[in-house]
Length: 433
Ligand SMILES: Cc1cc2nc3c(=O)[nH]c(=O)nc-3n(C[C@H](O)[C@H](O)[C@H](O)COP(=O)(O)OP(=O)(O)OC[C@H]3O[C@@H](n4cnc5c(N)ncnc54)[C@H](O)[C@@H]3O)c2cc1C
View 1 (cartoon, rainbow, N blue to C red):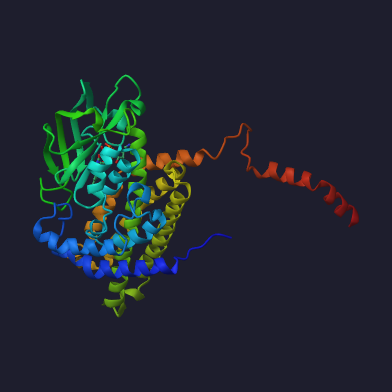
View 2 (cartoon, helix red, strand yellow):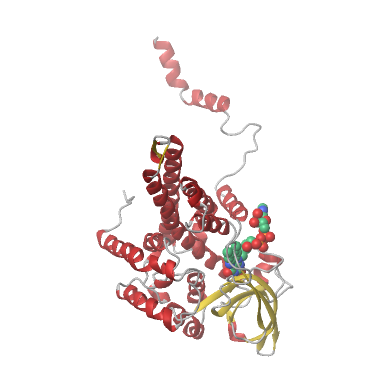
């Protein structure tokens, strides 16, 4: 029997250290430097952040998302999940631990598909936390269906020339380079005709037209860029993983990215549950504490059960990724995780907000930001509906239809077969009565 839900004692010590470090040293950064995670580190911020990063490195916890062959610490996804659920409590923690989105996914595909020269130029500084990156795939007219993308790269001598528009390229304004998905061969299907390019952000023709903000952010000061690629010329060696490989690479990237978001979502949801429970035990109304009211008990019970289910799902998918080392084999369960993730965070944050009354909906508490975060999770890395379709297709692969008039579970036929199976014994029993 190999099923075991225990964390080994040595690693538990590491997690305990990380838990205290995040609470004591990093969570205060969220208050001192809110919404500034992706601003390049100036001297003032470096003074605070660099010693924290150093401490994480000393503990061997820097960039644990990649295996040693890819330049990381090689913790594997399960250990990473246990760490990430701690980091998910704080906006800054993933940066201090060198495992923030979208850089983790970007680092992962460069590590998998990059040439030695590309790794030297982009992966090394990315892993060192010296620069940020951007994944530029969605277009203004199409997101969920990449086969509709129109941005092209056309070969011109030794170069490629990129033209088109990209939308919601998160973090482009602070990224040193962009990973851009474009059409390189319109004659074949999109699955073979699209390629990924590594493009330094300061390449002439990369025009950030607008930085779109999410709800609550100042207009034009968000971090999701509308980019016009206007005759952007890059050398032939800017292609990542070979011409026509964009879909294969995207699948690898998004597989990892989705599960990492899920790991952090456990931490965020637990934070909301912690706050809900504290408030329920602290607040009195109409003769008893909130925690004594059955409605509130229902909120707490439902939230705990949802979080437990979700956590086990995420840990199981992480374990499967480590076991198979192949995202394709875990596609079904990663899709299942992605499908439930927004609902879990939304429901728990919403109940926590409700239990806090008026205070809950103010900008002095984090709940509405969490609810917005849940809505974002239902879109970023693909809408929930699309993942449900993937999930259903994967589930259906294990089944086949029947040509009979009635389903194979039809009880009369099953009963008849059962009676036939035991016919000899039934006759003997009847005869001996
Ligand atoms: C905060 C945030 C960050 C993001 N960061 C990035 C990034 O860094 N890089 C990047 O390239 N993109 C990024 N995106 C874009 C994201 O990947 C897209 O929003 C997503 O793929 C959906 O595309 P869309 O917004 O164009 O919606 P559409 O494709 O227009 O879909 C709209 C809606 O239609 C429905 N729908 C779509 N397809 C189906 C279907 N097959 N069946 C049933 N219903 C369907 C769904 O309800 C869906 O929400 C980000 C998005 C957000 C919100």
